[in-house]
Image 1: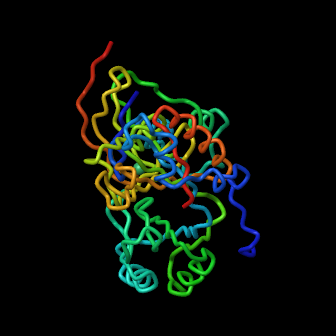
Image 2: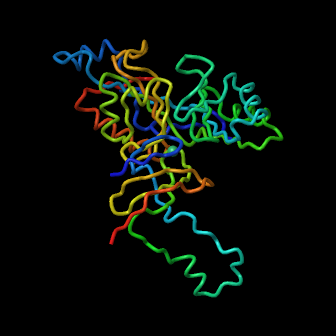
Image 3: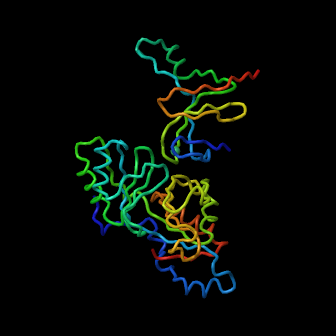
Length: 97
Length: 226
Ligand SMILES: [Zn+2]
């Protein structure tokens, strides 16, 4: 069970949150011009990288605000939390094989 | 906007008022052999006015209009409440988010919503009467914290949650807003423990009440008329 630091409410139990997937995925500026393959790539394809991932969470049973976490997908260690609209912080490099 | 005489508590069919007992009567019957300090007291505080308020905290026009209408400044610190009076039945404002509050009033919810709407006319704010969405379960007693801990993932230790603070969370997987109304040594804590108001959605109210009643059995439960 994770203890997630909501940037507004403080540390709360994981059960209060919902996961929003990888953060900072930009919607294509001109979707009309995209091919089906490019659109599918935007909608579905994620690197699913091993190591620190910038991801979105929502405090759905608390303050209902969205925010970002930098979380290690191997150790589950949370390295940073930052609000929507804020620049992602520098996080240590991970070199898992 | 419904007529007030049509308001119906989601716990009305449980007949809680008929099961309510006074402290002396209860101690005589239930706690003869036990520690009289032990136990939990629980009752429904129905028909409160609940008004959801959203707006830009920190904006001077918004802050002052709300303060003028409510008689108290909006709580800005997360998980805190504010109110003009100390009485348990007086108006109270809960922090729900950085731009969201609840105005909890013993009076008429729609009237409070109208008052805020008038005060905020022309401003970028939203006022919604949500009085009919929830009821309030009041829990107090020496084991009240233990009872809530069984179903609520919040850290209920006094260093995290104390009188006047609030938090939205889960209790037995039902979404709740918790407001601690008294500390362990509070004057009104007749059963010698902390006191909480638990706001729960109408559709979860019966489930949560029955869950709490079952969970409180081991501590000795007294039902109160609030
Ligand atoms: Zn939160």
